[in-house]
Each structure stands twice: as C-alpha cells, then as structure tokens.
Length: 337
Image 1 (cartoon, rainbow, N blue to C red):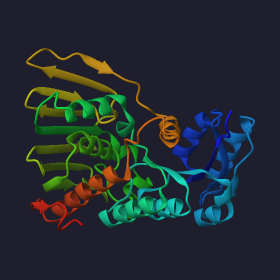
Image 2 (image 1 turned 180 degrees about the vertical axis):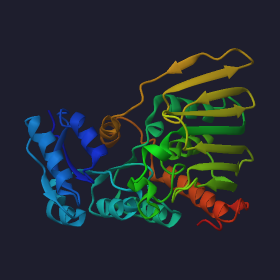
Image 3 (image 1 turned 180 degrees about the horizontal axis):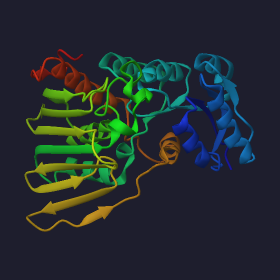
C-alpha cells in the first residue's frame, strides 16, 4: 500500500470533527497537524484520532505557525473556518506547495477569488471546493450531456432553496457578517448558486437582487433575476426563515428538455418530448475526502475548481452590489471585478 496522504486541518470545529470521525478510519489519510484558536476544538480532534488508535495531530493556535513548522510533513490541508477567513488561509496553503480541500463557499469577494486563482496557477496545487453539488455524479452527468447538445439550447433557469436557517443559526458566527461574508443566500444558498454556475456553464452578464434581513444582521431572504452571457435568464429565490427542514429545486429549461435537480445533486428528473420524468437518486457525497483523493491521484477530474469559484464570486458580488442599490441592474465583470 502506498503512503497515506498526510493531512493538516485549519479549523477544527464541529464540521471538521464530524468529518474526522469518518476520515480517521480511512487508511489513505493520516492526520498530522491541526490549527484552531480553540484549545477545546483541538483537544476534541485529538481525542477522535486517539480513540481510533491513531496518533494525535500536532496542535497549533495559529495556522501560519502550523504551516511553518509542518509544511515538510504535510501533503494536503483541509480548511474549515468561517467564510471570511478562507482566502488568507487557502492562499497560504497553496503558496506552501500543499494541496487543498476547502470548505464552501470558496471565498467572499471577487478580489479574493482572483488572488486564490493566481496562487493556484503559480503553485500547481490541487484545490477542490467541498460542494456536494460540485462533486455529485448527477450534476456532472447533467453538465456533460448539456455540453454534448443532448438537451438543446439553455433557455432559462429557476432555482429555489429554503431552510429554517434564521432560528437554527441565531447567535452563530454564520449570522455575524464580519465572519460570514453574507447570510442565508451565501451559506445554504451557496449550494444553489454553485450548482447553477456549473450547469449553466456560462458567465453571468447582469443581475438584479433584493434582500431582506427580517431583524437579523445578515440577509435571510433573497430574490435575484439575472441574465447569462449567452442570453438565458436565471432566477434565484432563497428563504431562510420558516419551519424546520431544508430543500432545493433547480429547474433548467432547455429547448429540447426540462431538467429538475436539487442543489446538492441528490436527485434529478429529466423530461424530454413531453414524456413524464422519472426521478433518479444518488448518494449525496457527505464525505468529500473520497473525491479529493481521487482527484489528487488523477483517477477523477476536478469538477469543483477555483475557476468555478471565481464565477460564483462574480455572481455573489453582483448580487450584493445590486441589493445595496435596491435592485439596480448590475453588470457582472465590470462593477464587480
């Protein structure tokens, strides 16, 4: 057996701990180091490793200290920190010559995305953004078939996502704009926007957006109308207040077919020539490490790239700029770059 991938972790919070409980049993992965400002989070991650008979990773309070001390002992780093911290940490990782599995959303602004894209190109590091939809076989198959012309020209897209997010994350860092970079639309709604960016397979041209905060410091509801460079029209609706639960519907209207899919790529329905659609289901990849390992080894293409992250960032900056101007039409790539 080949040597396991030597992994560092930046951000040992609940998400990282949840993944670690599975990853620690993967012989392809060895936890080497972790950085977090919380000693309790580092101790929890160490306990997960030792309980599985694995050595505890070296603990650091500062991620730069971890990279300086352990870069020669690492192959890759998983970053799972508040959104506003992603850019600095991700760029530091790839500049250290390490591969990167980065939690969604990639970064919070277009300039950050551009700097990460440039850093990745200089280093040649493998960077994968941990979007379930970006790694979903149903999303990727839909993209492949659309590119092959099976469905005809894309005419319009209608995307909806909802969750009882406002109450579920009350007081959480996700509702602190200086850490989150946005509210519901940028958190759970990021899955919807990212999957649409992948399937629309084109840059956005213009966008008009409205947001409502409903008494919170971040957006809870968002409505967006947009146009792709090819002329297709796109609408996004995000509702982060309501009963418990979370779901999404994305409908892509092509000249020759209607495709319905969810933001995470868990199910799909394709209707062609008026025939009733049959629902297909796929396991949502809640373990992105398997995909990351396959991409690093060359066994699978990277379908969740920094380039799509830049397209996403341009859309998000346009949405923010429009909402700040009460729905004004914003040209993507001009005012937002």
